[in-house]
Length: 269
Ligand SMILES: [Zn+2]
Image (cartoon, rainbow, N blue to C red; front, side, top):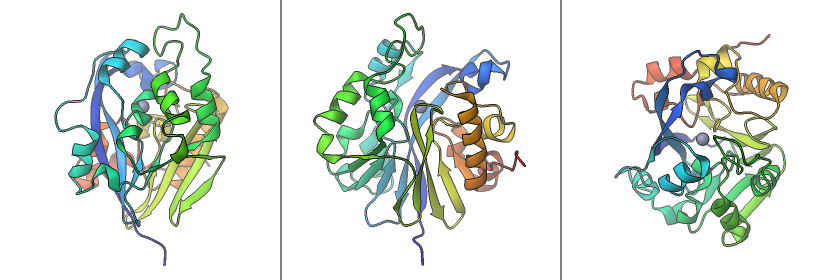
């Protein structure tokens, strides 16, 4: 019998970003700003608690380095506080799987003293040597990777870092799937078997399920368009419910509403 898991969203901060980031070439036509949550996910039901992503290191650094709009981590949204809602202490987390290494996904790793840290090798390489021009207005030369996160990963955290290459079933019923040159060079999605079907924790591969997956218009930040479209198709096939890392609907308590918004549909033949 395979393991049955539960996936809980953790709210690790908020950011104000342009709606244009939601889709390719800003095709949602809405040029306004929205406040989005910065989410991570706790997987219960394994031997130890497992985390997917770990939030940002510091709201100030996010604004300074990447030249982004307001970011905050209000009281109650720190990683220990959010884990505490489910009775988990940071030292009890046995594994953190990083969808990618952008500042808002891996900044909290140092708060997890015992977790092995699972990331794609190509993602760490890209984060260490990003190809951003100095002139880039948003994201800057670092392309949303924080040098402090990379430094920690290759030094103080290194003994616990586990580099993977490609697709792997990390635990029974928990699969990491690599999508090369998609949202980032080494973005991966995590698919978890639960009683409610396969939950896809997709990081920033998807910002809005309707726009990006059902309508097949990729999210605004990506490396290779065809790879991104292949990824959207694969996500739609694999997942029964899709959890993007920055869509507030993930926090909706009404299960039917949440499911309606986050089911991928079958957009491709
Ligand atoms: Zn993100």
